[in-house]
Image 1 (tube, rainbow, N blue to C red):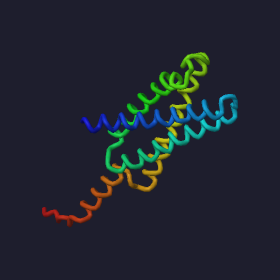
Image 2 (cartoon, rainbow, N blue to C red; image 1 turned 90 degrees about the horizontal axis):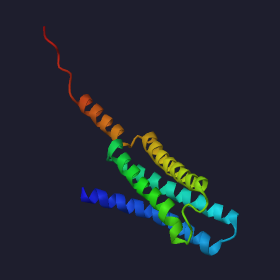
Image 3 (tube, helix red, strand yellow; image 1 turned 60 degrees about the horizontal axis):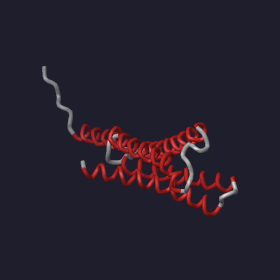
Image 4 (cartoon, helix red, strand yellow; image 1 turned 180 degrees about the vertical axis):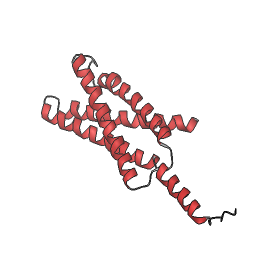
Length: 154
């Protein structure tokens, strides 16, 4: 159980670190340029989605959906709270400085990016037939096929 929480903490920290890196790049490199800031934000969301897609692809091979789904949801929830509440403070901004609309838009975009990453990873895994359930069903079919049929006597 201890390793499971450590893994979730590392995932949440990695997702938060991507956000912090993007905020620092925008702050130091493109302070007044909104177009460049939007591109850096888009790159950040793509990196977060790619991290989650790869992780789901890896975890989905040997774990049931309920287990890795709960783990990913918990890590994304913690990373979301850190991103919207602590992230702006690290670069000298107020989390609610842009208003409630900006705050909720940031949270919504983060959730959309993470959901897209999880969906891409899981759909790829399922399409290749390498997910946990498909492997169990394949193993079951092989075992059933290997046993000879018993004749029924009356």
